[in-house]
Image (cartoon, rainbow, N blue to C red; front, side, top):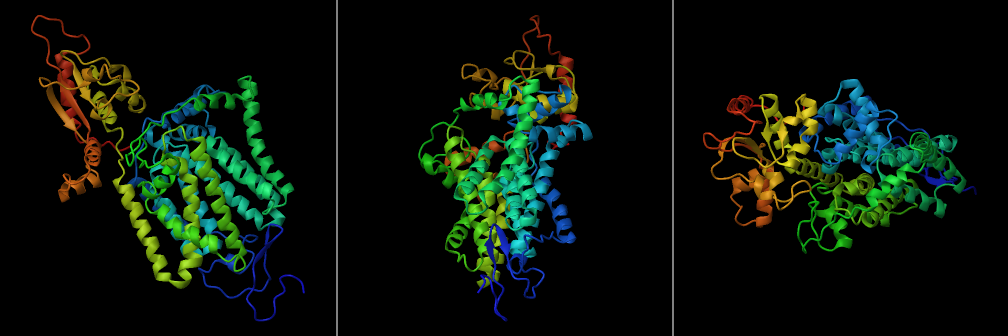
Length: 583
């Protein structure tokens, strides 16, 4: 009897042969939400989510972005913005620093600048578009696997995952990289069930992987994943991986050719990566202490796992993945080989990315964003478990789990600090509504440069020397509480306010949810003081001081006059209603 023969009345089986999904043509009637993969070769006949579902998603995502908005943070995003402007101003542009060499991130920002002009919103817009594409891709790829309702649930949980949502509101390399990695993965998965279109899908998957490598170097984990599959030879014939490799190589060869012509070195990317290899910025932390990246330290080898379970950027996703992993490892492959294969591929990609991030990036500060791909894979695995496992026995419980995870996601986004550059925005607001010079600390001045450019004010009016008699000084407590890369410990005291300084005005960002809850409940005394200080520090804003002028007859610094001091003070007061949100 031929393998796959089905006697009349029996349920149609589903399995994989030669990398494709094979199923008899007969199919059972199904409801609108029944996963089509379970009843036919859905991979060879993919369908998109209904128009209403995609429209609802598109209407929801801007609201989520507005709810979580952070904007420009003057961190790594300054590199991406700098490269974006240089691509426009100095084409053909050759980066001279590894942070500037991420064309899959900077070129989309350049496109937004050309379309809408330079500004904070246009700087973040391309990241927002990658976020939208990521959620829609996930919705449509999950649809044939778990059905419409669960696909919508998975897309919503992804869209509200704190790490993903918060990073989508800043100029970020992580969201473009995540989208391109996810796109490559799902195209590869589609190729397994479409023998007739397999070469094209594999080629497209390789191209997406190549573009992901131009967004972030951690994409080497994706190459490791495909390499392991090639060695095992269990998913595709080994010769089929040539299409995948060809698409990836085409992107890397194009970049190498560009650098060969304009930099004289086809391996210019590798030369720049040597700069990153010299970075070792992870500092030792006490047992059960909070490390620099805001993660709980227990033991370095297991700290990434602890982070997945305890950091608010992951909410409950790490915990949700635990029963999903148990279910996937015990799932009967004969019952549904397609689900088995997808779950194992997701686990394989998560494991490869986790190992690369933990081992290769071990010398860097442990940051949640390094584990964005694993958390995506674990979330998709959890949706498979909820749709194909838990919901079959306890549908209400499965729906309740999604609701709880969604609420915790939104709560975690709400408690995240969203005003990291409040003082810098206030400084630029002062410059816009006044004349004369203002003193501040060097780091605040440095972080204000992009805000000055967007506002059209002269950054040269910002003085970074220690404030002397007769000057106006904007104190940023966040940047002067401890030494930093621009302010050494020997000069730290020179930027602290003195008792005889006149306070003209102070401002602070709106209180966030954790600080307000601690104050309302009156539990500040019973909480660990480290947490209390952390919450108190999040409410710090900016204070404008006037340093007492020298005695009559002494020299007054030419940078500031009494008239300019009055104009700045009046301008600050008149502009007190100015918001610190993006344009």
